[in-house]
Each structure stands twice: as structure tokens, then as C-alpha cells.
Amino acid sequence: MVRMHQPGQAIFRSILPEDIDWRPFPAFPPAVRLAVIVGNPSASGPYVIRVKAPGGTKLMPHRHPEDRIYTVMSGVFYIGLGDEFDGDRCRHFHREV
Image 1 (tube, rainbow, N blue to C red):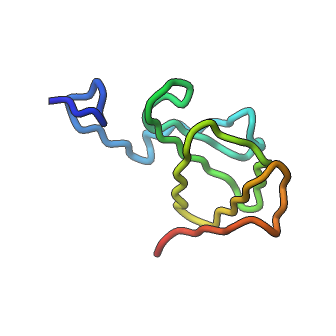
Image 2: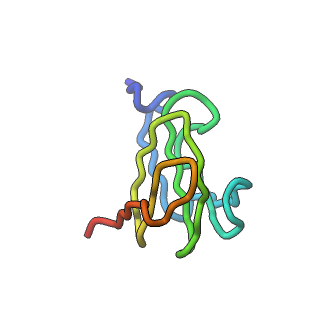
Image 3: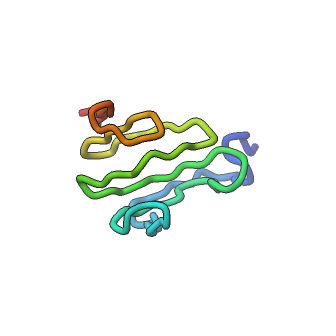
């Protein structure tokens, strides 16, 4: 039986670190890499992406049309809301230990 959370997949699928295709993304600074893990971010439906950013990288204010869930794998992730960058108003999140 294919479950709704696995459309088109009748078997379990694992994704190992060596399977991830990290690529530059035009909207991000050159050192940042993005990988689509599952799904298609350009289509409707769920998807998972991962982003690798070197320490000190700043992604300027932007918006997303859908809800986002962030998982910090390592380091610290700072995020703020608003139309203009204000480092003093950013919240920080780090990996759970």
C-alpha cells in the first residue's frame, strides 16, 4: 500500500549524505549550497530542502508563500522578520545537543 506521505513510492527510500546533490542557488551568496531532498519546491505539495551556509553568511530579507520549518544541523541560525535587515532583532537557534 502506498501511503499519502509517500506518493508514487511503494518502498522505503533512504537518503545518505553521499547521495545529496549540493548546488549553488542564484538567489543566495556564492558560497551557499542548496539541496532538494524530497519533492519539488516549484510544485504544490510537500518538499524538503537543506541549505549549507558558511559562518557569517547573511541572507537578506525575503518572503516565502508557504510555511517553513527550519532544522539547525550545526552552528547557529539567526532569523528575523520584517522588510529590512536588523541584526539586533534576530533570534538565534542552535542544534539540540
